[in-house]
Amino acid sequence: MHFTPRVFSGIKPSGDLHLGNYLGAIRRFVPLQETHETIYCVVDMHAITVWQDPEDLKRWTYEIAAAYIAAGVDPAKSIIFNQSQVVEHAELSWIFNCVARMGWMARMTQFKDKAGENSEAVSLGLFAYPSLMAADILLYKATAVPVGDDQKQHLELTRDIAKKFNHDFKKQIKSLGHKGDFFPITDTLATGPAMRVKSLKDGAKKMSKSDASDLSTIYMMDDADLIAKKIKRATTDADALPSEAEGLVGRNEAENLVGIYSALSNRSVEDVLSEFGGQGWGVFKPALADLSVARLSPIAEEMKRLVADRGEMDRILRDGAERARAIAQPIMADVRQIVGFVR
Image (cartoon, rainbow, N blue to C red):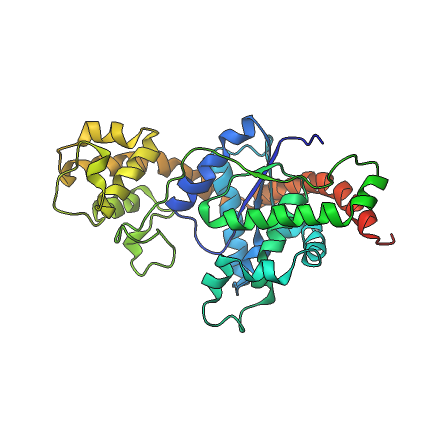
């Protein structure tokens, strides 16, 4: 069965966006809008699986939508919206709760990591999070999803739910005139190696909004002076930069900073080291600071401009939600018929 090549992806508004979010996800969204039908969501319903201050949730929702646009996602080419504006996400998620099995959910490693030893006290929403993720994707019959390593297990669950739904309701799907499966078996989308940005203070740890040091994380709304300050104060070792990538093995901080330079300059690590190999941090850090400011400051300034214009942001999100519903509503109408709901 043929489906429109369609990409769905989203970011959860549960904290200030940082460089890792940009290099690992947002920047990779931009070229896809030239080759696919692209739907980029701010997944605010996922955010409330753990407590969020309502005012912070609103602010982060606007910031993520603004980051999409500032990074180059065109609202005229892509659909940009926040998840809670399209109620079909919740409706399909409930149906998928009744298709998925408890054992499938219990095996999700992210739930185990987030719940820790206190699994009895976390929300039911956190446990059922992957079912909502499956609904996000399949509500639009997305054929591909750009996902990081930490989300691959959830995409496998999405595929399992689609297969079980297609199998359980095969007769009803056929009666609607479908010759094959109703939901596609969504694939991961390879967009090249993703940059896994590490803390500027500890190269063994992921860059995170929860880091104890304010200097460990570059936020997407940081101004030029603060970006440069954080780069120049980043932890390094005493050795000069190697001339080949093999020389970065075991040097976490060096590998991280060279990787950031590589990603921001769109050059290979080998190419970067061919320029800076043998030189010290007194040369490399200022160069990385200048590059980071040149690449990130324009995005930060555009984000600030957009966030300040709530009327324009509300218009973009409402328009995106209307376009998303135009795709979702007929698919949901078929789902209701398939499962036997009387309308």
